[in-house]
Length: 183
Figure 1 (cartoon, helix red, strand yellow):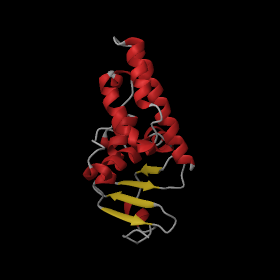
Figure 2 (figure 1 turned 45 degrees about the vertical axis):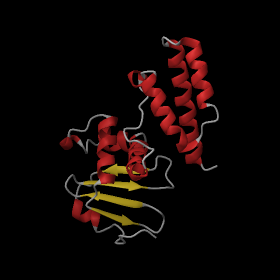
Figure 3 (figure 1 turned 135 degrees about the vertical axis):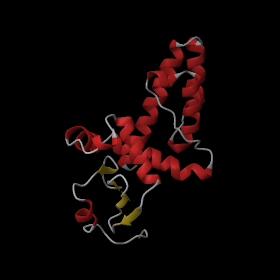
Figure 4 (figure 1 turned 60 degrees about the vertical axis):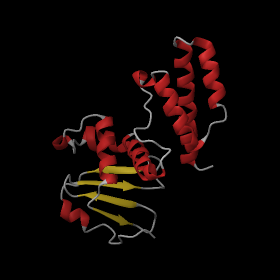
């Protein structure tokens, strides 16, 4: 199993455990928690997203930091948007937030100060790029000229890629691959 899949399964497992703990402390108590545990037993992969979203809403999990997807994963039309949401959350949870938002302050002009704001912005770039470039090594470069933001999706990076605002847009853009269709 690839490292990213193992990370995804571990995240799902932790989220399921958190939901069960919240349910146990709720009005339904142990019986409700046991029902949740039975419902989610063996739940792996993207198929769990809908169940987790519904159960998180049921137990009020958002109040304690478990965030359900903002997009309905059951609609095939939303598949791309859901992928963008998860990619943005992955990037915002990696080195990019610490380095480019907190340390270098690249996004202060856009009012971005929190990880959630950064994730939302990265998702916006992925969904609304002015152009996309592709490298032969699998990386994809999403460019949003209106905000001066570059999002790089890298299937080989542990955090899925990065997002930043180059100091000189024009100088940076000419260094990117020119290919605009995937390999």
